[in-house]
Length: 243
Image (tube, rainbow, N blue to C red):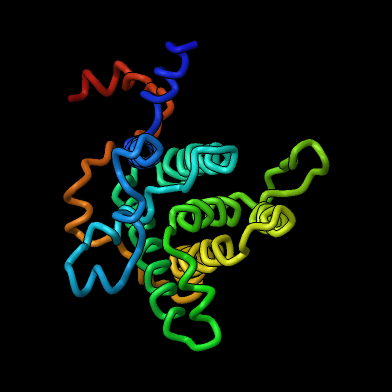
């Protein structure tokens, strides 16, 4: 069993393995009181006035208590992050990292702007960790890129992957969770999907082109496409003699 888990872990692509490892270690550290969540959550005042810039990253690593909900989100993180990196972004690690960077930046911006809107500020003030939203963004992007895959929810009913985000959002509401966290992930995911997949097909332009600096950080292995083994017949003997 331990060997199977080790093999499964080693076979994960680099971004998925790194993110999953950082998230698990962060949550274990908080559970053992080695790390305090108060030093991780997103606080704009502390970021700007006390230069605690690490909060812009650490709020994406903490998933609250290590309970069933934590295991639920770890499953989605490991599954859909891995599926995206191995399929849609195969051989494009830099582009996948840029997608996560875009999502994290947009989620942070939405929370900061929403906190300044009078009627929404109270709701956004409660969102101090965006890890669940970033995970939900990956689920949304995967569902848009694989809309016709058939799925089952807890064995109760089947649906296609295009409806997966809405099924999960409905489930969150039914169990009493705030819908804002999932909705933020859907907004960020749809923004990325539109700018990366829809808009380029409409205009021929790609606004989310990965910067060269990020590409330089990752040495992507080229995707090798197997070619058919074609053999050409030797020239006739007469042509050889004529030369």
